[in-house]
Amino acid sequence: MTDRLLRVNAYTTLDLVDGRARGHEFEADAPGVVNVTAPREDPEHVTLEVELDGTAIDDLAAHADEVDLSPAQARTLADALESTADRVEAAATDDETGDR
Image (tube, rainbow, N blue to C red; front, side):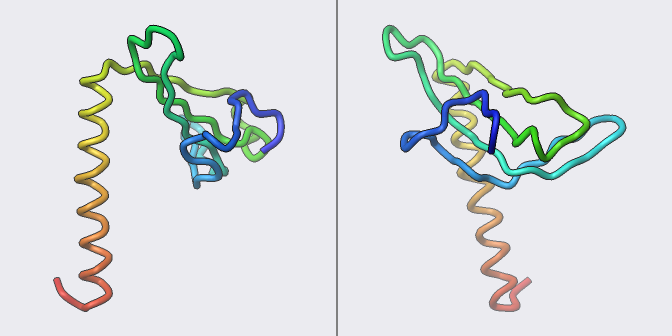
C-alpha cells in the first residue's frame, strides 16, 4: 500500500487484509490494514483503525477510518468477533465433513 495514512510496522494488528469499500454508486475490493491501539499515556479509550489501499479504489479519496471505543465497547466487539469466528469456523468444518 502506497500513500498510507496509518503507520504500519511490526506492531500493527493486521496488515494486508482483504477489504471492501461500498458506496451508493460503487463497490471496490482492496487490500487494507486494521489496527487496534490506545494512547500511551493515560489511555481512556481503545481506537480501532481501518485503512484500505487508496490506489486500488478510484471512487474514494485516500482516507483512514477510526472508531474510539470505551473498554466495555471494545470487549463487546471482541466477544462478537469471537462468537462469529466460532460460527464461521464451525460451518467450514461442517462443509469439510459433509455435515449439515
